[in-house]
Image (cartoon, rainbow, N blue to C red):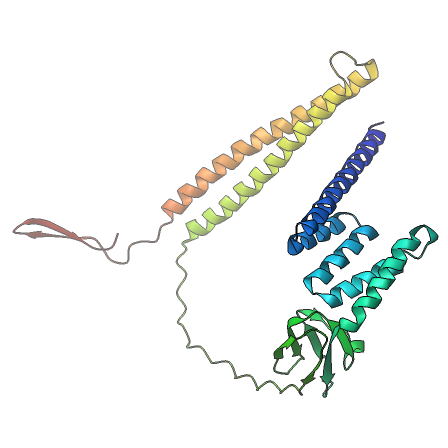
Length: 313
């Protein structure tokens, strides 16, 4: 019964989360449409993008594509129109499919292209455009990009990294020639550190014993905590097994057994805490008594002003 209730609660929470995401996505979608009508294109694009993240919808993608076209990000808009066209190839979405295909065809002649030409295919060569990895299949091919600034970088094991920035204009084709990456200069041998004289150990035998006793006290205290938590859990289980107003004879016997086990563990926990406290006090005492002897004796010398006490304390 408890398992069924848990499953039901999880399903209820999942349904609630889904409904909340749907409502938030719809609100952002409506905000996007309103912002477009007000001429606030950047804000509208952000709203459509947030709506799509919360809940995928081809209508949202279509509006986001239109918004990106208004921004002048034609390559992004073109890719989104194609995505909508690919996802609406059903009779029920024929109108949306036709609109997405027509918009993609209208945008395509206005696209800008960037070609990255690779002359030296070094082992492990990786190329990124605006921080995203460029697939090997795209090397040497004109790839649609949005107009504006772009950064191309390349790296390979044992080679000096290379990067270049370029400004892409609307309806243009540009090429970046990636040069052969230079080899990394040999690493300098590590400098030898001056030898440092080792210091003699300062822990006395009593302080070493003190550390051991403190470790034992910590272990006992940890065990006592575990026993205390276990005792509390057993008492809760006993109460759940035999509620005050609804308890059968069999449940009462089982609850009594759980209660006995809880008392035993609670007693063991109390004893453990007492023992841990005593051990901790002993560790502190051993640490204090195990202080190293002063390397210089205390000297008392009389002067005309009184007594002068000297030495190391």
